Structure formats: C-alpha cells, structure tokens
Length: 104
Image (cartoon, rainbow, N blue to C red; front, side, top):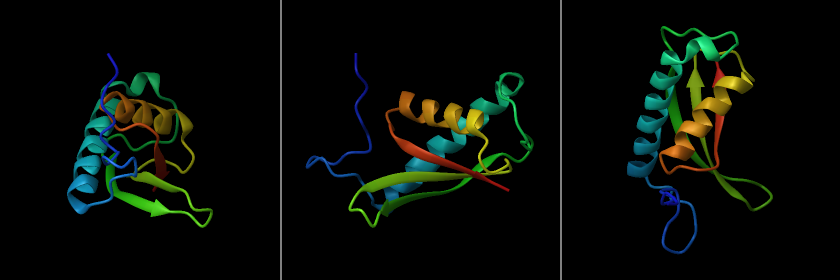
C-alpha cells in the first residue's frame, strides 16, 4: 500500500502553510530521535546529545521549482548518512522528497 503524500495539496502543489511546516518540523525531530537510537549505524561528526530539527521551510527556486527543506543542527554540514536517514524516515511518514540540511 502506498502511503499518502502529505506534502501535496489537492491541486498537486506543495503545501506551504505554517501549520504544515510546524508538523513537518515535528516529524523531522522524531526522525532525529530515531537516528539517535540508530547512531551506531550512522557515521559522521554528529553531536548526538543535542541533535534536532530547528527549521522547516518551503522554498520557491529561481528556476521555478518549489521544494521543502528541513534544517538539522548539531551535525557537520554534508553528513550524507544522517541526511539520508532523516530523509528516508520522513518519506516513510508520508513526507517524500524533503531536502535535509545539516549544520552546526
């Protein structure tokens, strides 16, 4: 069974309201909590004690595309294993194709 894409409105555009972004941030924080439980399988420079999502945003790029992004603090920029873990967790919860940025 395919999970419903919670990121899309009825017209196929991405959702961008504050309530949705708050919900996305909360789900990203749950993904961070799941990552902490799996930290032995995720390599990288990560402060596991304080790992959290600090922002979810909707963006409209200069090429006309729109996208969703979450920012996770307390990990080195470019920590691909952690970014992939969080993105996969989000997708499994019905939030596919969300970009994950890690930063200190």
